Image 1 (cartoon, rainbow, N blue to C red):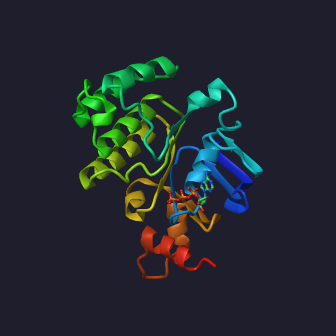
Image 2 (tube, protein in one colour):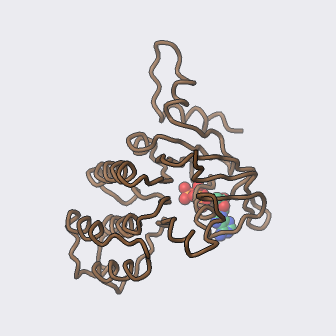
Length: 242
Ligand SMILES: Nc1ncnc2c1ncn2[C@@H]1O[C@H](COP(=O)(O)OP(=O)(O)OP(=O)(O)O)[C@@H](O)[C@H]1O
């Protein structure tokens, strides 16, 4: 089975502080992976290492079998939507789509236009004039239209309203199923992940506390006759950390 993200003893240190330490995970392709953990746990650091935006201090990371960001082909296969919603404030929605088409060899213009229309985004509006949630939706549209094999999303739902969160979860699950897309997304809100993720990585204190298919994790931790939500499971691991 193809591995979409493999990290072996991966670590990143800023000065004397470890942002991520001894991270070993092996995520098979075809999953929507939820990366969860408290503030400062190392989620963004892991995602940036996977997207090739940071270099490891120790260990090794491969994405879709290659070194992150190492070749144009590798870059085209991975979409990364950073937490700070990277858009050009002075460019309109339509100009962002044109730029996406020019920069990405696998660009799906039909998907981009249909999504913008469905979201009710005015193509002539500058990104700087959009709301935080609209900017997040536009950034996500650019990520999806790139037609990556792996889409990495850092806190994609943080700025979305509840209805938009539900639509986002549905859209992502559909895109993953239709286009054999693998997704890794981070969130603090476990209940949001529950609806969309079928694989979970729990990070706390810069270390991986738990990783695996959600179904298997839940089955392994469930007591006979008892109910266990993903949120309960995550909290158990976060409370147990040293
Ligand atoms: N550029 C940087 N320089 C120094 N320390 C950093 C830098 N980026 C992150 N850190 C530190 O690394 C640790 C992990 O940060 P990271 O942003 O990966 O956490 P996170 O889980 O994404 O947090 P949040 O949920 O708050 O976004 C934190 O202690 C943070 O202070």
